[in-house]
Image 1 (cartoon, rainbow, N blue to C red):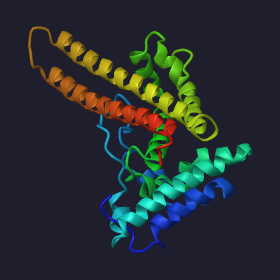
Image 2 (image 1 turned 90 degrees about the vertical axis):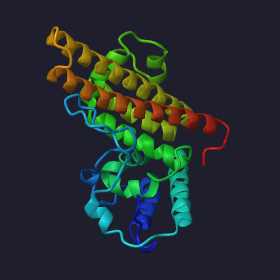
Image 3 (image 1 turned 60 degrees about the vertical axis):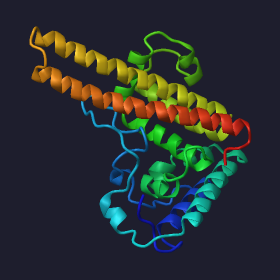
Image 4 (image 1 turned 90 degrees about the horizontal axis):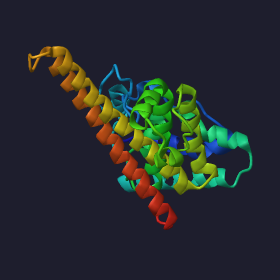
Length: 273
């Protein structure tokens, strides 16, 4: 994001306070909410196969961004980002209250994704806030696009492989299974083995990325078959354009999967900060 609040008392510090405070006190209702975010994090654009927009990095709505005049010290922002991520993770790991886990799991819904985006979305991918940001956006994306993601999983994993075992998918998932898996991956990062949660996220995104590639190929093949001997028909051109967008989204997902894998590696070495 190119704009920052003018002082620590404005939006970024409210986001930090919300993240650090959420585990102990629940949602504060801060922030404009999910509606003003144009894309749910890198790689997590809309997955509805009838709405083939490529994913983009998370951005605030222009009206929100325009209101954040001035600039905060980038070093202060980075420190706030890392400290809040570590505090949130530590708070949940030292709590036995299931309500605490629920509040942290639903941080996006209660605090507002724009607040979290301001705090964590610019963090380096191989950092704790960067990884947590992607885990939260993965959960939001999965829940909001459960139907098409279930279809993409079945395309990418028609027969169960090790990817299914790692991700924790027992069979071809239905919509409700996608929702449960989304919650399970994120909650596992807080109450289970953090590295395992990241590996589950990586396996899941890899399969969906493969599903997007399969769907892209199928669309072009169908258009070519329907076009008969006329090469380059309008239908074929449209299908190729749609396929390119699907492939773009799939490539972004594969990059995110590698980020999750790298995060797991760093966590096990005690170097994810």
